[in-house]
Image (tube, rainbow, N blue to C red; front, side):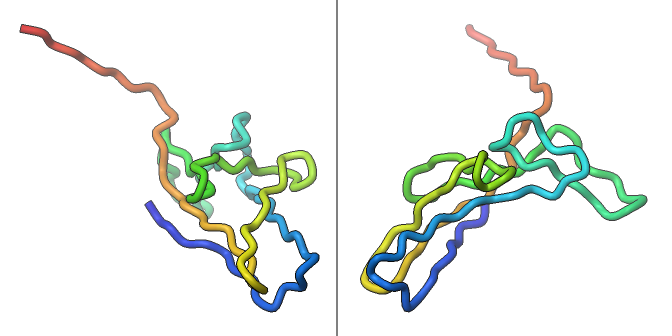
Length: 103
């Protein structure tokens, strides 16, 4: 998991910045909150895993795509700064098998 964020400085008091996310995979995932993995030509791509970006302050998964239709995510204002804390993590999106054994 990677936690970081985006910060803007010297923002005017009336500024209401937002962030949008656009994936660049050749075959985007149907679920716009999951970013498809890709690799350079002739390299294998891990199967059954995607990348998910979240707003670390709310836990909301950030949808990707056209920023207008995918959604805009407001940045938090503190003084003349605007920030959005982001977290990126891999998520298993392929088949999984769970076995529970009870005595």
